[in-house]
Each structure stands twice: as structure tokens, then as C-alpha cells.
Amino acid sequence: MAANPLLTMTNIEKSFNGVPVLKNVSLNVERGEIHALLGENGAGKSTLMNILGGVHQPNKGTIHMNGIDVKMANPRVSQDNGISFIHQELNVVPDLKVYENMFLGSELRNKLGFLKVEDMCNHSNEILAKLGVKVNPKEYVRNLDTSYKQLIEISKALLHNSKLIIMDEPTTSLAEHEVERLFELMKNLKKSGVSIIYISHKLKEIKKICDRYTVLRDGELVGTGRIENESLETITKLMVGKTISEERFIQGHSFGPILLEVKNLSDGLFKNIHFTVRKGEIVGFTGLAGDGRTELFESLFGYRKKYTGEIKIKNQVVKVDHPRKALKAGIGLVPKDRKENAIIKDLSVIHNLSLSSIGNFEKTGFIQEKIEKEKFEFYKQKLNIKVHNPSITIDKLSGGNQQKVIIAKWLEVNTEIIIFDNPTQGIDVGAKREIYQHIVELAEQGKGVIILSSEAPEILKICHNIHVMYQGEITARFKGEAATEDKIMSYATGSKREAEKIG
Ligand SMILES: Nc1ncnc2c1ncn2[C@@H]1O[C@H](COP(=O)(O)OP(=O)(O)OP(=O)(O)O)[C@@H](O)[C@H]1O
Ligand SMILES: [Mg+2]
Image 1 (spheres, rainbow, N blue to C red):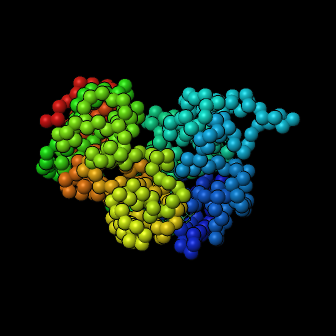
Image 2: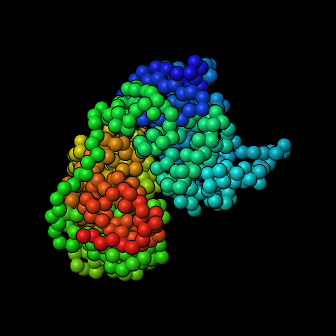
Image 3: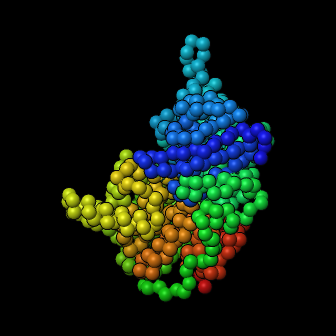
């Protein structure tokens, strides 16, 4: 370790309402390194960073920057010490423009106190260009796609010429090419001596971009070292306390009759889509960002109405033009963006779970409360949701645990056909397996399951049949056991086009 690291956090302790979340944790970050902060959902990564960022105060412990003891009394003090923070949950204000978001709290003004709008726009443009983002700085953020919001959040952190940048899962909503740009930028920052603390559950990213790592488990420090000295398996084992195998989850096929049949579906963003889903079958759709798969399934769930072609459920043609109709016809959709579409922040964990299934147990008063509690306990066990008190608001849960509540909520809706869009976003490697296991059980119970994911390894693990999309079309179909990551990629990137038949 360097004799004089940029940052030293020593013996940090933190409890919320008497529940210890960080126990005697220490972290060292050197100048010009990318340091991975790893651990399962709820391990305490974001909490440690919130302490460094002045959002929370530790119960014990010290923070030194450049060898000097600092108290991060609030976010401003942290910023004044050269720290920028890209939060796990998007922090942009939808009703402000792009440049207003970027300069929020540090607006440029002339001598008379007037805002220097053009200067701020130009400066915003320069930084956004470094990330390869083409967006008008005067555009309202509410009109932009989630990936842009994440990029604005990143750009905002780059504005301050910080010495240390905290990136808490910065790539969850980014497309592959955007991730590549971010990595280039991180390498350049590193060259200029900036340090980065990088949190991600995508371990391949960690291997690619990080120099050293620190692993937390249940709020304790369990390991730290150089990335190049460790295999991904060792790091995973440190995180979850056991070895995680990489095998396929499903064997053997015995499907029932066709539940869903889609014929010749088109709407501008996808075209001539044909496929079927049988009872007991798990069907995967994968491709790169912008391949049309999300829009295709938004049409099946009634969010997009202007499609042509035919949707048949159990041999009946249905016109799905509203989510309520989709639910009635037996289709459920777990949306891909928890931050924007799925949670209601001010509501308790337990009410977020019961929200969409109210029709399932339409009882009143305390009977309903009792049923809700039982249901919650069931999913808490099943998906290993870490929460001490389900009556707290959902935004107090760690990101990955919020995602598990969303999945539980949709499992509770219990439709015959269930679509999961990007189900394991922000979920740790161990908990992913619990979710896969549950998905396989759903199929075994006779449901038709559809998985949308940009992660080919995930699709390979749990799908009986796989469809690859490119620019709105299905360009390849594979049986799960016949597919490989390479084959999928060659169709997903458009380098091969003719559709292969499912054998
Ligand atoms: N404001 C808060 N009030 C109560 N509990 C909290 C609060 N913030 C965090 N916690 C709890 O602290 C624990 C650690 O959460 P944290 O967000 O640090 O986990 P994490 O390692 O970032 O997980 P993830 O990978 O899911 O984001 C969790 O059990 C969480 O519920
Ligand atoms: Mg977190």
C-alpha cells in the first residue's frame, strides 16, 4: 500500500435504529486508482459511501483525506474536499433542464449575480461530449430516456474536477457502447491522477477496469487486495461466503399447450415478430440496447397500442390496449427500470409489495393486514430480502433488495404468462440464483415465462428457447442448450442475419 493514500476510512461503524449496518470497516484508496467496492445486496456499500459523501454520519470511526482528519458533516463538506458522488438512485430533477441539473447548487453567475446560461450550456456540452452524449443542454430532463439521466448524473460529477469520484452502480441503465465510453473516460481520469471508487454487481466490469478491491459482507470487511491477483470465483466466494457454480439451471423439456402466440407483430420499432410460448416454457429474448425487445413486450402488456399483427392467448385473439386488459388476459410484466417505473418511494416495503395484487386479496382492515404480512414473510424468506422492519419506506432498503420486492410484487400478481424485463438489475451474484430458481419453479408450475435481458449468460442459464433480436427483428432462434454467448453475439450485433430455426 502507498505510504500516503488519498483516502483512509478507519474503523467506521454505523447503525440505523439500533441495527448495525457497518461494523469496524476500513477502506484505503490510493491516488490514481480505480478501487472496486464489492459485496452482496445490503452488505453496506452505499452506506459506507454515504458516510464518505456526508449524507450520513458514522457512529464511530475516522476519515482522512491526504492524511488530514476530516468530518464530512454534510455533502457540501465532502464536495469541498474534492469528492464527487454518483448515486445509485438517480438524483436528477425531471422538471429542470439538462444544464440546470448539472449546475444545480453551483450555478455560474456574473458580477451582478445573473446566471451565465450560455457558459453553463457550453460547459455542459463539453463534458457530455466526452461521454459521447448528444443532447441539447436546454432540454428538460423529464423528456429524456433513463440512460441519458444516468449519463447526466455522471457528467454532473465530472464538472467539479474532483480528486475522488464515487460511482455507485453507474452502468445499470447504460447501453454497451455507453459503458465503453465511460470506461475510456475512467482510464483518462486515472491517468490524470483522479481516484475512483467503483461499485457494481457486474463482476466482468470489475475485472476489466479496476485495480484493487475491498469486499464487505454483512457490514464487515472481509478482504482487500489487487484485482489481478484474484479470479472472479475467489472474489465471488469472498462476497457470498460460498462457491457459486455457473451451470445451466434447467434440464429436460416437457411443455404443455401454447399459451401465447404472436404473429407478424410490427409497430415501427419492431417488425414481423413471430413466436410462441408454451405452458411450462421459459423463452428468452436478448440483443443489444435499441433492438426493440422492450417495446415489443410493452405492446404485449398494453403500454404501446399502435401495433399491427396478431396476439393470441390460449387460441383467442386479443387486442391488448391497456395494462388492465393484459392482466385480465393473463399477462404480467415486471418492468425494467425500478428507479423510474416500479417503486413508490414514500410507501412502505410491505405496501409496495401488495400494491398491484390488491385484487388478489380484497379484504379490508386487519384481515388484509394479516394476509399482507404473511405474504411478505413468504417472499422475504424465498428471495432472501434483507429488511428488519417491513413498515419502513422502501427507499431505506438497499438497491438490490428494492429490486427483490418488485419481483415479489409481480410474482404475487400470479398471471399465467409473466414477462420479466431485466429482472436481475442490481442484484448480487448469490441472490441472482435465488431469483433464477424461482423463475424455474414458475415454469414447473405450468406458467409461460418470458425473460428479456441484455446479458447473454443469464439467458443461457435459464431459457429453454432463445430469440436474438437486432434492429427490431428476430435474427436468430436457438434451443437453450445449443446456444453459446458467441453465437448470440454474432446475431445481436448484426454480423450474422439469417434466422436460424429452433430445431
Ligand atoms: N436510511 C436508512 N434507514 C434504515 N436502514 C438503512 C438506511 N440506509 C440503509 N439501510 C440499511 O443498511 C443496510 C445496507 O444497505 P446498503 O444500501 O448500504 O447496501 P448495499 O451494499 O449498497 O446493497 P445493494 O447492492 O443492494 O445496493 C441494508 O440492510 C439497508 O436496509
Ligand atoms: Mg447500494
